[in-house]
Amino acid sequence: MIASTFEASLALDAQAELGEGPLWDDDAGCLYFVDILAGRVHRFDPRSGAARTYEVRRLVGAVAATDRGDLVLAVRDGFARLDVETGAVQDLARLPSDASDLRMNDGKCDPAGRFWAGTMALDERAGAGALYRLDPDGVVSTILSSVTISNGLDWSADGRRMFFIDSPTQRIDVFDFDPARGTIANRRPFVQIAPDAGMPDGLTVDAEEHVWVSLWGGGAVHRYRPDGSLDAAVGLPVAFPTSCVFGGADMRDLYITTAAVRLSREERARQPAAGGVFRCRPGPAGRRANRFKG
Image (cartoon, rainbow, N blue to C red; front, side):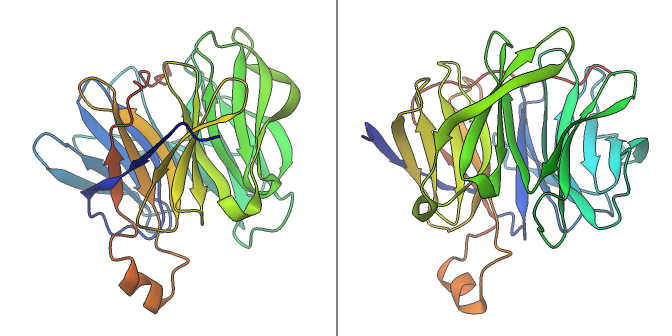
């Protein structure tokens, strides 16, 4: 049973084809997100309304803030760094496998400052992707193989559980997580989502240990209690929300990225804000993003 329902409003008309990977930088007070297919990283300051675009010039699936003030990126064939002052992009590490027909899709840092990101095939064929871990020393390890669409990631507050989505499974899964070693074990379902509700995409865990997940094709974000029961829903005027993150001065603004890529011309006319960033204040607060420590 849904306890609460909310509606999100447009915060930034980003016109992204495939907006994804929102990251709130609490030091800078701004939101970063990517447009995967355009190869762009966007920066949005909600206080001033100022926006800036960084041209990565290759597919970019996710971003994370670092402890030295720049960004680490999950790019098509590996990892790179982005200088947010100059816009310069520098390669950091390559994936340990042939990525010629793959791309990165989502990623996030764990509490120890390791950057996790996963891949998917450009044609979305089953089992072609993987989940990788980039350690602070630049070493890349394959953590999961046979992944179809690697998606939402986050950790519990104590760092002992990791949530993960492989979208076509229609599940949010949870692993036991070893914070010291950065390893996972004991995969099991946390939430099974009905196909008519949409496909699970990006997720975030709030300060109350509830899980928020964007539902691709469902036009909504759902909040699940720690026991896996549905608690709240956020409605959007667009079909394809992709991910979500809390931000703002009090960490109570829920920012939601969206996509327009699968819409027909007629659907785009009916959903003119598709590809924009939406915002609502559903009540709970989020947590500070973990930073890459390399």
